[in-house]
Amino acid sequence: MNTTPTTSKKPKISYTVVGGTRIDRLRKFSFPFTIILLNRGGLFYRSETILELQDLKVGDIICIEGPDIPYDIEPLSRKFPDIRFLLLRDEASVGEKINLGLEEAQSKLVMIGWSNTRVIPSFLNKAFLDRIEQSEAICTLPMLKNSRAEVIPSIQIPAFIRNKLKLLPWKPGKNRQKSIVPFDYCGIYNKSIHMKIGGYDHRIKNSYWQKLDYGFRAFLWGENISYEPGFLINYISEPVLEDNTPDESYKLFYLKNLAVKYKRGRGMLPYSRIMRYLLRSDTGLIYSFQEFREVRKWVTSNCFQFKKDAAALVDQWEAPE
Image (tube, rainbow, N blue to C red; front, side):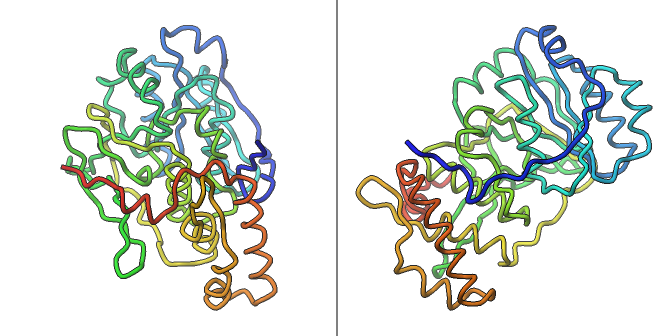
């Protein structure tokens, strides 16, 4: 089966690796596990978070920085010799950084966190991680609490209201719950499934639509994103607000997901969708037609990956109790 994960060839991200011991570090622990730390919130948060993660003694730790490299990287690499720092030379979206981190990771399960978050260590044990691996979710989500210890409504439920897609926020409870996206990208990712669906799309720069594309693609292709009780992450400072204004990123998300129809066991992007797209696109008829044709080629290449379309996904979504 011909599978093309994204609509165009992924650009190679140029980066340098500083520090770390890779395989030897994983061998120290009974369950291979990787934590990827994305920088946000200043140098103090990052240094404190690295120290706390290292004290957990759970596995490999990767910090992704750049392209503006902080001045304290060399001192940090000497202070934490087991930590790997990936120093990017070019601009990259959050999703691209996560893709790169998972490619570098040696373990099956990889947790994504931010430098302004704190992981509650009680869940990080072999029994919990075994359960996560056996669930085969592409991404397992934590309960998230803000700096005031209030539970964030991080479960996102998709709904069509007056023919427009809306995400309805919900607080996680005592049972597993599906969510269409990983809130703030946080969660434990299954590396092999993440790679199988193509990871985050590098062409979608807006983080709101990038995550939504990832989540819809995962569910439309038969995968699952779900909250797991007992998995807890706290924020030190508030998460970043995202821009959900329809833009260039939305157009690609729409074509790859909402415009796809599922019929006779396969996904398809029918030409009947093109007029609506051309009329609403602001890039001109010729370029818009090229965009449509390129995504249609991608959908055709991946037609048998689709297990349903967006309408069926939303209609069949079970409301949390």
